[in-house]
Length: 70
Image 1 (tube, rainbow, N blue to C red):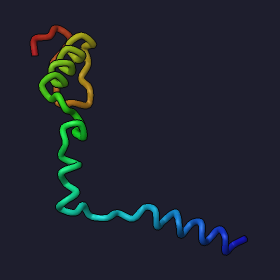
Image 2: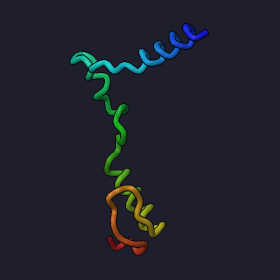
Image 3: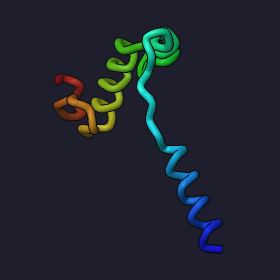
């Protein structure tokens, strides 16, 4: 039983290995649909409106209050 548990834990650790991205694989990661935020301007506008209406300051770097004058 211990041997089986040891083999399962070792196979789980082997699955966590990180391999570097090769030069010919980088074009797949550079596609626009792979970006965290494909529309940066629209996202910035939505964040500004949200923080202005909610009178809050979230995790972004937006400052100001609920009046929308920041």
